[in-house]
Length: 269
Image (cartoon, rainbow, N blue to C red; front, side, top):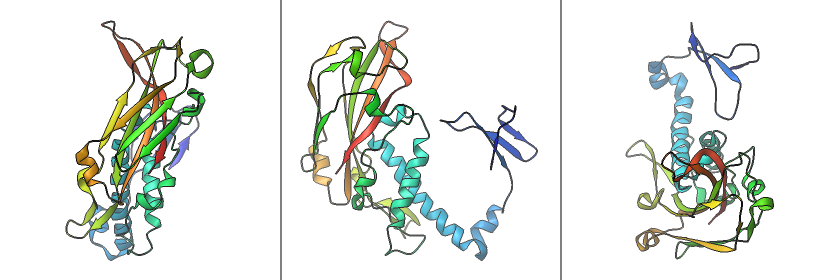
């Protein structure tokens, strides 16, 4: 892989060379095509180690996909390729499994919850630089109940409105992620507690003027009794929060502006 620094601003492919861009970067990436054939990778003894790594990577990508679900859709505000970072996080967690054979190592978030705590969805303007008040939060695992108390907000000094949009709202989401392990029967990774894997509950606040003083208030989010009954030690609970900005839509209603906002993980229990 190479990075094109000259005048070329194209994407696509030319005679075995591909040019493409990735979100969060204005650089053009160049990659040559080729490599071993699929049949060789699937059957040749030379690629036995690679096949094990591919199988484990499948577990990491499945983990990342469900973590995004647990964010309650707030990852839509990310300003970089969040999925790739979560894939890498899954791989780092996977490496901590020293009991399983390589190719079958588990992804046990419940054993390293701090790895995801404070995770920011944005790099250019992280959550704490946009919402400049400290929120207080509590997450009760037993009842799957979370409360987030937002102090008084004076938008003139407490809210960084980069695009100077007329409206903003606060969103709180709580989701669950089960530990994942290799399943010999299906030759793939699966969650230990599938019925609660990726479940979410979301509290979306009202739209407010971006030029106002918003009094202190509390946002509450809770999952159902059915989810509480499924909760085990192998399930991690993720509490996230976001600030989203909006504008007046075509029909006069307030609508969100794509990528206008930020979010972060408040805690993982």
